[in-house]
Length: 117
Image (cartoon, rainbow, N blue to C red):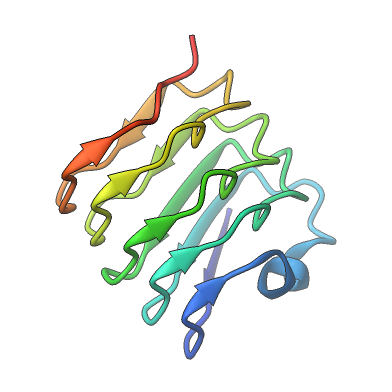
């Protein structure tokens, strides 16, 4: 398990996550992003072994369609206590192992996303 804080950034990108790329055995990631409002496409493209991801910060509003791309082993996703209002179509594509999802305490207005079957 790794608890990782990234302050002073407004967007999570593949480039900002690059610092963790060498952690091939990482299974649980607790990501604290107090200033970020967006997670961009392919931010987690090198995290195929992560089983549990919790994103904390409170100001996260937007996850781009392919933001979770690369998390092929993910079975638990916690995006609670953020400011997410929309879940884009295709957001959960490729997350075939996902069996736990917490979106509580957000500002969800609509969801075009479908959970994997």
